[in-house]
Image (tube, rainbow, N blue to C red; front, side):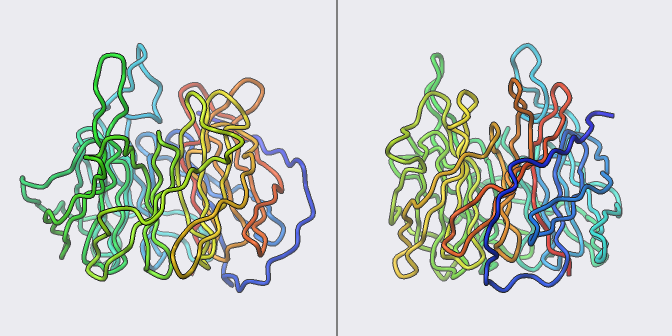
Length: 402
C-alpha cells in the first residue's frame, strides 16, 4: 500500500456548540493521499473523524467536486504536477490525466465508480460542475486551458464539448468557478513569479460567457497588467454581492463587486493582508485556499510556509455585510505544514485543514477546528496521516449527504 493512515487524537479542548442550524444529514470528508481517496465520517458535534475504506484512482488525485445534488462525485487525477515527486528537481508534466465519476451512497457516503473516465489532454489542477450540473469543467495549468465535458442523465461523463480556438486562457490556470448566475465561468490564472532567469508572468481573472457547455471570451481582469497579481483561488459570498480572491505570492485577500450578468468589477473594492502586522511575510510564505462560512459573516484563508510552523495558519476575517470589507479577527496555527486545502461542513460548525506535508517529526495531518459563533476557531484535535515518499495529503473536502 502507498500509505497507512495513522490516527492520533491530541489536545482535546472543550468548545461551546454553535446555535446555528446545521445540516440534518450525515457529513463525510474525502481526503486524497496519492491515488487513494479516503472517506471519513465527520461528527460535527464531537469534532471527530471515523475512517472508512479508500478508493483507488488511476493516478494521483488533484481535485474533486460533487454534483449540485450531491448524488455524484467527480474526481480529477494525473501523474503530473505538484502531487507527484519531482524528477531531477523538475515537476513532471505527466502523460495520464482524467476525471472519474462516482456515485455517492446516500446513506453511507461510500463511493461507487460509474462509467468510464474522461481522458484529458493535460493535468487538471481544478474541476467544478456548472450550476445546473450538466457539465464538468476542468482547469489546466500547463498549458493554461479549460475543457468541458457533458454529464449524462445517469451521472456518468460524456463527450468533450468543442470550444473556439480563440479563447484566452491566460497563463497558469489554477482554479475554475461557475458564477452563481450560470451565465459565466471564471478561470483564475495565477501567472508565475519572477526567477533569476525568467521575468514574471502576469496573472488575471479570465471571465467567459457560458451556455450549454460552450465558452466565449467576455472579460479579463488584471490590475496593473497582471503584474504583482498572482491570483490563486476565488470564492463567492453567499449573498451574491461579492467575489473574494487570494493572491498567492502577495499574501493578499482582495474583494470584487459581483455584477448581475456574472462578471466582476474591474478593480478590487478592498485589499487586505492575510497575515497579521506582527507576522509579515517571510521567504516562502504564500496564501492558498479561501472559503466562506455558510452564513457569510466570516471568510477563512489558509497561509502556507515550508520553513516555519508559525507560518502555517488559518486567518479568519469578519465580513461587513453592507460593504463587503473584511477585517482580520484571528490567526491560528494549523498544527502542521503546508495547509494546501481546507473545508467547512455545511452547518458551519467544523473547519478541517489538510496539512499537506510531513516535515521532520511533524507528519501530514487532518486538523479539526471548532467554529464558534463569533467565527473564531478553536483547535480540537488532529489525525496524523502517514505519507510515503512522493505522496502528500493533497486535497480534502466535506460533502453533506442528501
